[in-house]
Amino acid sequence: MTKFNETGWNFDNSYAQLPKSFFTSHSPTPVRSPKLVILNHPLATSLGLNVQELQSKDGVAVLAGNRIPEGAMPLAQAYAGHQFGHFTMLGDGRALLIGEQITPNGDRFDIQLKGPGRTPYSRGGDGRAALGPMLREYIISEAMQALGIPTTRSLAVVTTGEAVIRETELPGAILTRVASSHLRFGTFQYIANWGTVKELRVLADYAINRHYPEVEADENRYLSLLKEVTKRHAKLIAKWQLVGFIHGVMNTDNMTISGETIDYGPCAFMDHYDPATVFSSIDLHGRYAYGNQPKIGGWNLARFAETLLPLLHENEEQAVNLAQDAISVFPELYHRNWLSGMRAKLGILNEEEQDESLMEELLQMMQEHRADYTNTFRALTFDTPEDTVLFGTPEFTKWHELWQTRLDRQQEPKESSQQLMRNSNPAVIPRNHRVEEALEAAVEREDYSVMEKLLNALSNPYVHSPEQAEYCTLPAPSNRPYRTFCGT
Image 1: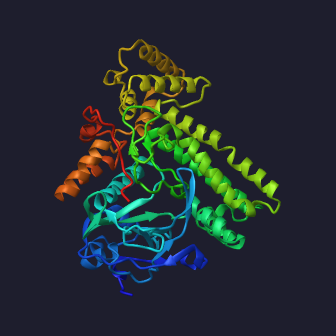
Image 2: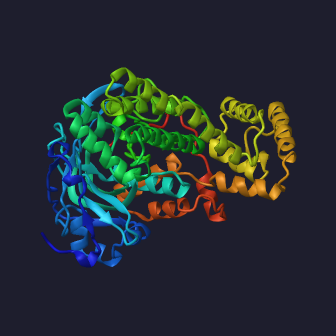
Image 3: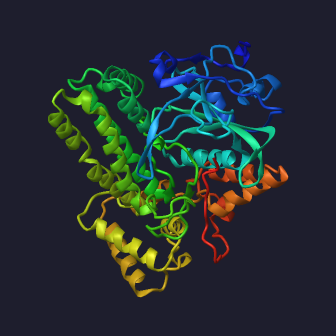
């Protein structure tokens, strides 16, 4: 081991203390000539890391997997998952958990390298990653953080000095990902299918201790775990919908026990409002379309619930009933979160029965007129309806009058509604054409200034500054639909 305590690494390795069947100890494969291309200074500082040391030769060597810091115990986690509805054995095929960083505040975060070489779970892959997809994850995950959506974070991206072969030859890179944990629905599916009930109990106890310690003393803590995970995903997916985020690959291995967004592969943000929007090149039938995300969230929770059945009750029928009752509330919980968020987007501070019809009428108009999702709510926020394609249509004129009348019925002043809308409707999102522009400059020309400028605009999406205006513009019309790729 090489000592890098001056960098601030403070590792604990609780996952490595779990049964050996849960993971495989494995070291990264060194790369030729690592170079740091972006470092998340605020995140590094919050983790207790020395930014200057991270940028040194030794610091970059750690981020590239060329050196193992003191206290780290690299391992690849085993998991399974339903991929587009089909169950399969998986695992960290191109990622390694280096260790769990204990921050100065006593918080625990996984530090994972993505793209550090083959693992026992690589399934024929090279275990490497290309620069473009790693930068995409950096941009989108940090944008999600700024939007107030639970997410894994991106600490750094380094280039490897080596090419990876996909459809073409691409520059290789490694992303350092930070997460509350990498426990997935698929982690439980793996143990439930190939492990023992004793091991399943160990995993569930570990998840409770790490993420839901408040339920540890409950009479049936495993049922409480299921209920808490259900609540978190009802909130998470509602937040996705409220900003027009499309995950793109909501397989069960891409759903976390912590309720964080994870695995930014073919993800993207919606421009014009359409529930059928799909960007992922591999989602041929729209399984993970924007409008389907809440239903898929419920389906994935059902698969997670199935893994817990042996722990919920010794009688299988009673266990099934308990599980069904626990997850049956998901649609209502999701709907309640979405409704609350949509009220905020419209400046509504109290509740009336007809609020939902007001929302649905607006969304229907937006779909019919191909109105931009983000910019429409931004125009309503600043009372500039003339900035939307809806302006001047009879149905919008009528709707706008109903909405204003609804706001007039509130006891709170108009300023309160406007402030609520400012805090709920982002000025900017990572527009697809802007993300592609940044990635092209970085990958093709090694010009990272475009990405840095974009990240700066995305870092405070609710400030509504004049500098953000250029990032609100729509892409030029195109006959070809926008497509995203997993980048594996």
